[in-house]
Length: 609
Image (tube, rainbow, N blue to C red; front, side):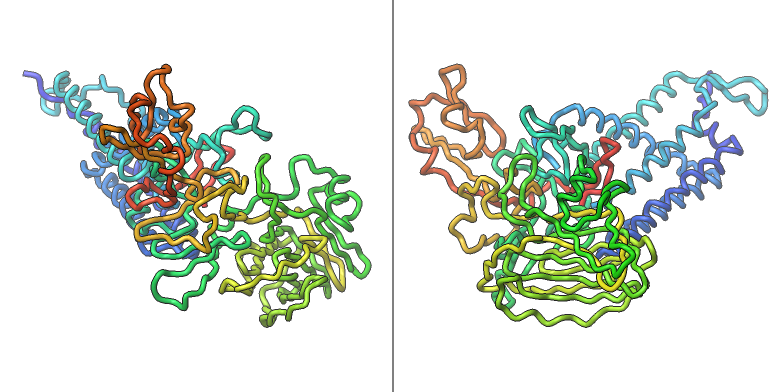
C-alpha cells in the first residue's frame, strides 16, 4: 500500500539552509512597520496606528523564529500568506481591467508589503524542490510512493483557503480602484477625455484602506471612497470637508465650522493638518515650458538667465537689496475650468544661501482684505513676521509674535514659506521652525481691498542671498457653487447644517467636480402608486434622454436599479422640477474606505494625502 508523501512542507523542513534563509527575508518585515510608526506618529497618528505597526513587527519576527526552529506552523502561515498575496494580485489585475464608475491613510500599505515579503520567501525556498522528488524511506532505502489523490486534495485545499482569505482581505481590508475622471485632479489623475486640454494622462490606480474606517473613523480632509448616495452602484472619491453635527461655511476659499452644541457660536477656520497640506499644494510656477526669457517676464526684477540653471535668483554681491515679484494674479483655474477668483493661500520653496548679515524675505500681498504678510529669515535662523496694510488699506496691523531663533540656515538648505488657512508657517529642511496663526474666528466683515500689483514676492535686505530651485504653489480655493456659478445647496444660505452621521465631500478639482454641493434627487411617481427616487442630475434620468427604443422610459434609482415604464403611466409630469430636492451628504454606512496610495503608473507612486 502506498504511503503518503511528506509533501513540500516536509522537504522544506529537512533542508538545513532553508530556515535561516527564509527567516532572514521574513525578518525584514519589521522595517515597514517601524518606518510607518516613525513617519506617521509625529504627524498626529493615533495609538491604533502605532500598535498596528508594532503588531506587524511581532508577527514577522515570530514567523522568522518559527522557521529557524523548524516549526510547522510557521511554514503553514507563510504558505497561506504567500497564497493570499498571489491570489490578491490576481484579483487586483482583474479589477484593474474593469472601469469602476468614480471611485476612490496609509495604514494597510505596510501589511501589503509584509504579504509580498512572505510571498517572496515561499517562492525562493521552493526553488530547486520539484514536486516529482520523492524522499527515501529511512529503514529500507526505497523511495516512497506519492499518493496522487492526497497530493491533489492538499493543493485544492490550499488554493481554496487562499482564495477565501483573499476575498476576506478585499471585503474588509484593501480594495483596488481606477480613477476615471478628473474631479480630484491634480491630487489624483483620471483618464483624459476627448477634447480636454493637455497634458494627457491615464487614470491613477489606487489602493483603498478599509481598516482605517474601523480603527479611527473619518477625519476632516481625508480622501475617501464611498457609494454615491444617489446611485449606490457607483463609487465616488472626494475629500471630506464637513463632519457630523456642525455648521459649515465657505469664506474666501477656506472652510469654517462651528459645532451644533457647545462653543461660543462663532465659526472657526478648519486648518488642514501639516501632512495633509503637503499633498494638496497645486503647482503654479515653473511650468513645463518655462525658459529664461519667460522667467524674466513672469518675475519683476528677475536677473538675466534666472532659469538657465533651474530657477536661480541671485541678489548679487553688492548690498543685496532686491525684490522679485510675481506679475500675474494667481487664479482658481485648472485645465480649462475655474472660477477665476484670486487665490491668496500660497507657498514658496527654494534652497537658500544667505550671506553673513543678510536677511531674506517672502511677502504674500493678499487680495482678501487681510493685507500683506511677510516672513524674514537670517543666516543664524532668526525668523520674524511682519503685517502691513495694503497700499490703500487703513486698518491697524495685527500684533506681531516675537522673533523665533532656530538652527542656522546652512548654504543650500531647503526653505518653505507657506501662507495658508489663516496662518504663516516656515519650514527649514522639512521641519517647521516658526508659525503664526493670525486668524481663528471668522470676521463679521472683511474689507474688500484692491488687489496689490504683485500677489507674491521674495528678495533680500542687507546682503546677498541666493534662491535656487524656486517653486511656487497654491492651495485649494473652495467655493460654494463650483466653477459655473450655478445653483447649489449652499446658494442663498448663510451656512450649511450637517446632521448626525452625515458628511460633506468636495473634490480637489473644486470647479469641475460633481460633489455634495451639487447633488440633488428626483422622484418619479406612477399612477399605480409606485415611485422611485434617483439622481436628479444624471444623464440616465434626464426627461429628454430616458426613453428606451422610443416606447418605454427608464429611471435609475438610488440602488442603481433601472425601472421601465410608459410615459402615460407617470403621475407627476413635472418631476423634472417640482420634485427635486438637495441631497448633499454621505452617510457613515456608504463609506468604502480611505485612499491609501497611487501604485500605478509607477511614475505617480505616492501616498495619498
